[in-house]
Amino acid sequence: MGMTMPSMDLWMKAAKEHESAPQIGMYLFHNGVVRRSPKAQVRGLGGSAEPVTGMFFSYDKEKVDAAVADAYKMEGIYYIRVWLNEGELKTGDDIMLVLIGGDIRPRVVEALQYLVGRLKNECVTEKELN
Image (cartoon, rainbow, N blue to C red; front, top):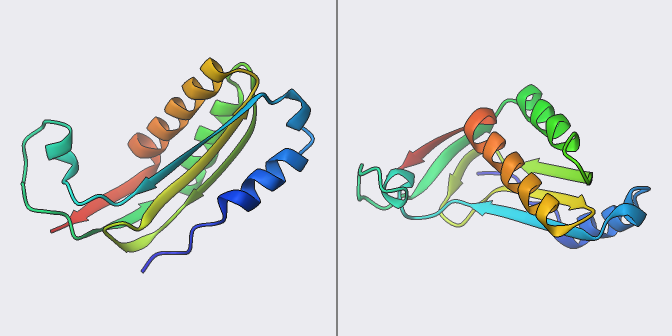
């Protein structure tokens, strides 16, 4: 059983009270959840067609911190908050929540794609259960 995801409303309240708020023109959330379709199948890589019933999820905190620090170096990015679940999760459970705040939409979208990609490809371990 995983952890309880934090409140997006409370995250937004904190973000808008943060010292960086006057520089920010857009906030963007990513909320990843455990899906029933196997990752390999969704990405067109073949693999099992058996539905996913859950997953084991963990992460490397040092790698996450490094990815966040690198995302802060991107132009126009002033606010980042990340929450990652861990443990045995079931279909529909939240995997991660990422909030990015920046000056303009293209930069915020790029930073969100960059950070979520780094988290998924370098920082987390996922083992799907069938």
